[in-house]
Structure formats: C-alpha cells, structure tokens
Length: 363
Picture 1 (cartoon, helix red, strand yellow):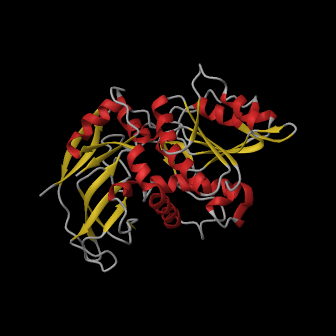
Picture 2 (picture 1 turned 90 degrees about the vertical axis):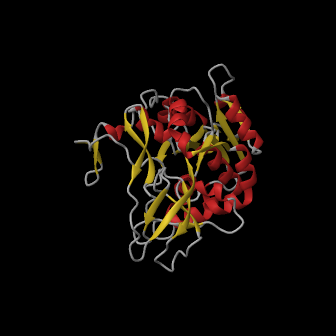
Picture 3 (picture 1 turned 60 degrees about the vertical axis):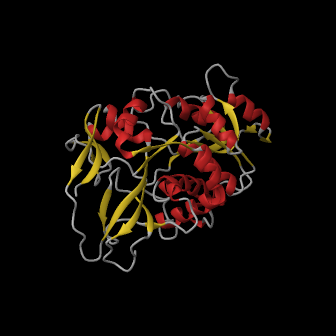
C-alpha cells in the first residue's frame, strides 16, 4: 500500500502525492503517523514562493546565500511536527507500539532508522497530540531561553532559567512560538512576562494561558512607553531585561528593540522571508547599545553544545507539556482536521480565508 505525502507541487499548488512504501531495513522501524502539526509561518513561505531558499542556494561551507538554488519545486518534505506509533521495528531501541515525536513531514508513514533520524519517546500519560511540540517546535523555544542564559552567563549556563530568573521579560508575538516561549519563561522563574501582539484573538489565547498581554497595534497606546514606565531599574535604565522576538516582521523587531533597557539583547526566534528593511538601526539600537541574537534551532550558543544538545531541549519541552499540557491543548491547538483536508486548509490559511493559531492534521 503506498504512503501519502502532502507536498507543494508548485507555487500556490498543494497535492497529496503517493509514495511507494519502503521496506524496513535491519536496525530500522516504520513510523505510522498519528498527528502532524502545521508550522504555518514556515510552510506558507513555500506555498507563496517567498522562502529565500527557493530563489538562492545556501553555501554551507561559506555560510552565504547566493549559490545556484536547488530545484525549487516540488517541496516534498513539508512540516516538522510529527507524532507516530512504531511498528515493524527491527531495533530493540524502539519496540513496536512506542509513541514517538519525529520530524519527517506531513505523510502517512515513514521508514526511520535510529542512526539517521532523531526520535523522542513520548512519556506515558501525555496526550499524544501534544507530542507535535516535542521534537522541534518546543526545542526552538527552549533554545531561545538558552540563548538568553548564555547572553547573561556565557558558557557557565546551568539552567534554562539562568536568562530569565527574576527578570522582566517581553515576548513580541502571540503565535505558537511566542506563547510557548512565554510559558517557558514563566515556568523558569521570570518575575514578569508580558506578551505583545496586535491581534485580539491571539491576545485572548495568551490571557487564557494566564499570561499578561499588551496590544501592539498601531492604534493602541505605545507599549514601549507603558513597559518602560512600569519597569524601572535605575535612573535612565528602564525596560525589559530580555525580549524574545517571535514575529517574522521587521516592525516587530523594531518594537522589540524599543522595549529593551540599555545594553539589553533581543533574542530573535523569528523568520524574515522578506528581510527586515523597516528596522531602524540609527534609533534605539544605536543610542541604547542594544544587541540582537538569532536563536534558531540549528545551533545552541557557542560553548554549550556538549551539555545542551537537542535531546535536553526536548526534555525541557516535555517538562512544560506535563505542567501546562491541558491548557496548551485547550487554548493553543485551535483546529484538528483530517490529513486529507490539508491542502485546502493550508490554501485557506495562505489566502487569509481562515485564521488559526495551531492546526494539527490527524491520520
């Protein structure tokens, strides 16, 4: 029986393609998909044709864009938030029936191997749907806290709380990344966490999770003035100790810089497919001596790879899901739809006919 895979066949064109089912090699296993979370911010860039990788290749040796691009379409591996049940296992590491989180795209099944693929075993008692966050999305957010800790303590980091414990924290963006990051900051001892977003529905979700919010829309009171009035450290020293920037828009990064106290750092978890032309580096960035640190999941802070690998970030994610899983399931996951509806749903999201916080495909 062939597997089915949700792909971007071309700009604006989604399909469910059939893929021949592979045999399981010695030492491998078959992962039969239960759930797959949609990361709309990234996935829609492939559908819209705005992802930079579609237009310029990345030279990993030089760390530069500008190499000839690979063939842009089809995009055959879309998504990185899968939960599956192991079957036909040929390895004692993952017996049949084990429920795991992986990152292999929106497809009905996948042949994995523990020496090639990253596998996170989900604990008994955890709602398996929440496992969509365990392998990649949650570690992205935990890595943001780790970068904040390294900004404060360098390689002497002992805990994810080192960057936020007792701190005043602002989170720009109430999407999935922003809300999970805010919950992690709260869990790890931040003195105050405020989430800023222009969308009432997203602020409502944050408030339902017990988080304080501010309206960052253009017709609201200036949130930088509000927070810098409230958060005083000393004369001439006001604002957030750390800002986690989680919206892929230049204006959001500009707001993050305005929220910071002097010599603070924006920990940037966003993806800017169109660049960031509106960031005004001659204003707060220059006069307040600020910093911006990209904290994408591709790397942990320098000097910490030996002690803070992806597995440890997944373990921190599972701790959060144990603590706040019921609220996350209720307020963050706004739609669970059958896999077959995936093309129509992603098209509706791309064309703004539908607004969702977190969509999960069920199989």
